[in-house]
Image (cartoon, rainbow, N blue to C red; front, side):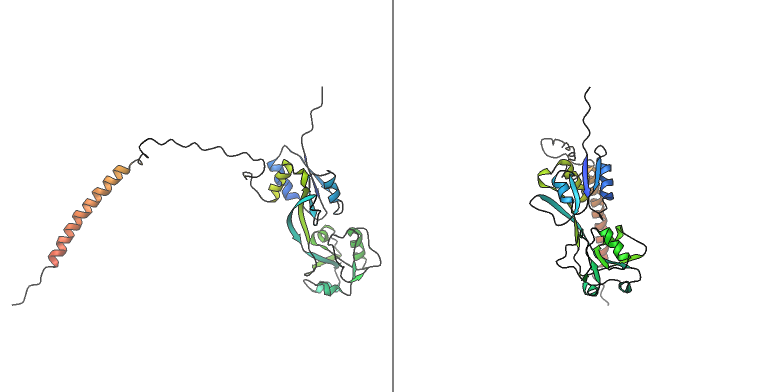
Length: 262
C-alpha cells in the first residue's frame, strides 16, 4: 500500500520585528485545509531562503533584488534610539540625528537601516547582532538606532527609546520569487492587500449567474394594479375637478361687480 501524498502547505518566512499573526489568522479562516508554516529568518538570510525555495514567500525588509523577486511594500517603520532610562535623551519626546552627534552609536553587523554613514561616534567594535548591541547599551557603552519593532522585540526594563525624526526608515514588504508565483502566493497576496473572499482575484469561485425572465412579445407587462391606480387617480382628479368647479363658482360669485351706491 502506497503512502498518501502530504497535503500542500504554504511556507512563510518572516524577519525579526515583523508580526504576521493577523495575516496567518485570516489564512486559517479562509484556507483551513492548507497548513501555513512560519519560518523566522534573519534579515540577511531572507533573500537566500526565498531564492533557494526554503519558503514560498516572506515578510522581509527592503531592498530586495527586483530582477529575481517581486515585492509589495506594506508599511514603513520609524527608527528610534535605544538608551538607558536615565540617559539625557529621555528628557525629550523625540530627537534628531544631530542630537546624537556626540554619542557613541553602536552599529551591529546585522543592522537593517542601511546607513550611508551611521550617526555619532563609532564604537570600539561592531557587535555581531542587535541583541548583542542591546547588551552594550545596557552596560552604558553607547546608544543604538534601530527600527521601532526591534526596540520592542528586545525590550528591557532598564532601557527605553525615543523616535529619531530624521533617521532613515525601514520598509517592510511581502516578497516572493517572481518565477514562483503560485496560487497559494496569490492567496496570501490577497490577504495582505485586504481583499475579501469574493474578490475577483485569486482562486475564489465565481457567483452563479442570475436567470433573466423572458419578456413576452408585445412589450412589458404593466405592473399589477397600475390600471386600477390610474382609474382611481382619474376618479380622484375628476372629483377634484368638480370640487374645483364649485369653488370657482363660489369665487366667481364673490368676485361679481360691486353695487353702485345710489
